[in-house]
Image (cartoon, rainbow, N blue to C red; front, top):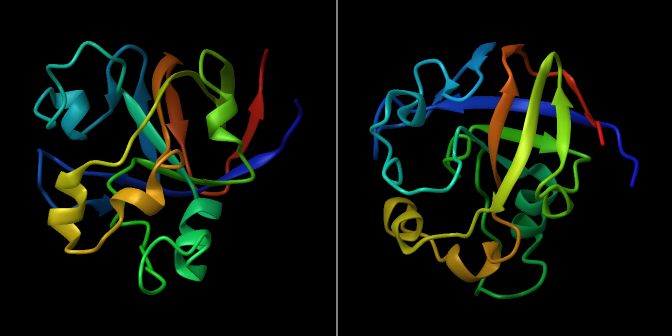
Amino acid sequence: MNFKGVLLHIHIAQAASYEMEELAEAECVAGRGIVGDRYFLGNGTYSGRPDVREVTLIEQEALDALARNDPPLQEAPIVLAPVDHRRNLTVRGVPLNHLVGRRFRVGEVILRGGRLNFPCKYLEQLLDLPVYLPLYNRSGLNCGIERGGVIRPGDEIELLD
């Protein structure tokens, strides 16, 4: 598998349910997360869970498909802005479902794919939109940070192993 993806957006929230804030750059700390984010601070909704959730990613292609109502799983297209989906990084050209257990680079930062992220009813309630079923199996990837550093929109993303 070979790909060249790109980082489009970076978002953090200071605590569970807080509004997401877009960043022009972010400091990623190995074993912790993005400085200032709820999972870095340990107060995210799922912070107590044993799975790795230092950084969460979602594909822009999945959001584009939702906006086309493809596949037609809801009554009408759903437009989700990058600030709405509650993942830290919005990426393009990165096959996230294939990166479970794999190492990849985002700019100078090295991530390891953890488990696939699944949509939750909480997101549906927060957005008041029927996103659960259309995001199933394409709701992103939870990752651990192996090597920290600073990331910025426009950074290249590539597979390492």
